[in-house]
Length: 337
Image (cartoon, rainbow, N blue to C red; front, side, top):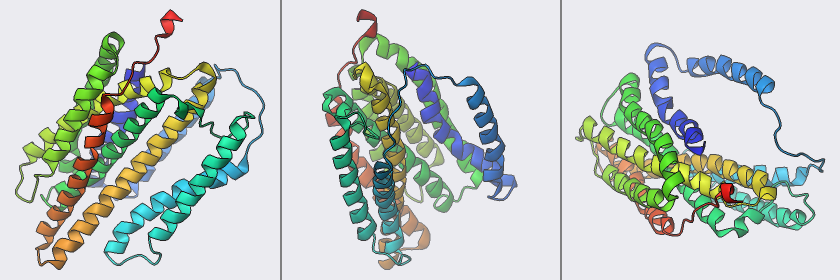
């Protein structure tokens, strides 16, 4: 089941650039939103009719203060990270450190309030799942994986278009094999997980992910498109080997009363990690490009240098999942309970 869900979680953003390329090749950028709008409306109607409650529910007080702390906290951190790229180009009016500091303080207040309310079962997000070692390690690995996925997905199209000179359609088609590879991998990984558990999948997946990012540090303005596609496919397979086992281990390691909170934590941190990964990679690319231009490089060489800088940082970060992958444990077998 998690293998099938991972197809949606991982493949949807992976094939996004291909669909966007097809649209932008013939229409203006506004059509990206016009095409998605009816799809969203159809999903809303179908979801409202077919999705039903299967869990036990109870009445509880809605803590508006926690909502405000979370919004300011996550929003401040993401805004601050994305502003660092603008600051490197001299285009921001607010020092990035200010929203980052405000966001960190707000998140600290959110955590403090959640801990103080969770013993009364009133917390907006119960943080007790983090007491579970398997959940914490798996969730941390999911965060790094999603940040890498979205960071790479935003950076590769920019590299293909601004450095190698490809148009939007060619760029989308170049990224399609990676999305297909991830989609094919996910259900197979789900079957392997059922037999052998997460560690035989997560360890080689994290190594392949890191090797792919180190491979992307070698690309420049002379690189072959075939090489970039091959590295992207390897990166996608590595992520495919990681996401399904990690999501299953994270949620499967929790007791029943913490399922909903564990799911909320994982879903929230996935979205935040994707946004943070995008902001971080763009910031590093912008900073690297500005430094290369200041050193006298040509515009294309400077852009290639900025991409190189972002992938170098991403490659170093990818060493952490390799270390953590050896501590991933198998989720309990519910069939034996």
